Image (tube, rainbow, N blue to C red; front, side, top):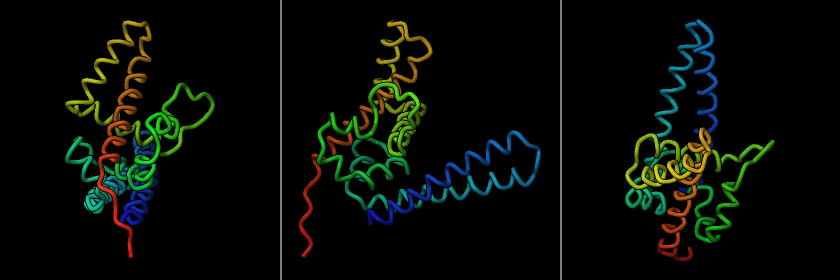
Length: 182
């Protein structure tokens, strides 16, 4: 089950990148073929996202995150399918390093799991998730009073991503252990 979800989420990540490029081309050119390609890619990406959610509900940690925390989507399924064991095995501090949530990363690109965690945090804030939006507001106000100005948004999003990571770690720790296959 996890391998199938992992394969589908990796396909979703690639299609989302292609969809972003098609949207950029659609907005910069006035070609009907670019518009049609964008619509097709958007439709297939949305269908793939719903299929990923259906398949990922079979993973215990994903279903716990959907029911307990209220998170869902292909980005969460990617993180759980690839790092479900790591979320349980590593400490919270090591998870922060693994997901590259520390400091500025000058001249270095974040890995896929880090970018998807940040994407999940952005969507949670945009949709005003009850628990995480309060975390965002608290950090945003704090960073603005400290004089970060326009960077306060980004720093607050990173704090929300860390909080999501810590909540997933807590859920993974409370997960019932699997019995060995015989």
